[in-house]
Image: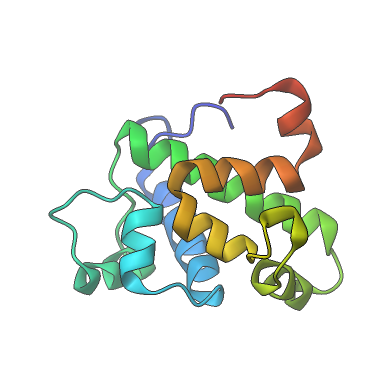
Length: 136
């Protein structure tokens, strides 16, 4: 899924991916402002617009959003591989402080370190991403 862009996907598939990502971000209990920042949504997108992404609209097709979308999907996939029988463990892992992240939780890393945080968490969870130095 290296070329993940709404232009290369059907509208319904793009909306489905957006809804799944929003569901996960909501399950991680991220604030609206954190979601806007994490996904690098354009400045014209406000917190009140996030419900559109939860229901009927795909994320904007920008290089920044698409890059972050690839990383979030990579994190989601790696968590489901790490905890295939207990999805609640994914939330537990995301919210638990770790020495690996300077006593911060992975969610704090995502929020505080922006794109570098996304990459750091993905590398930690997905050894194949880190191994190949994948830049998708």
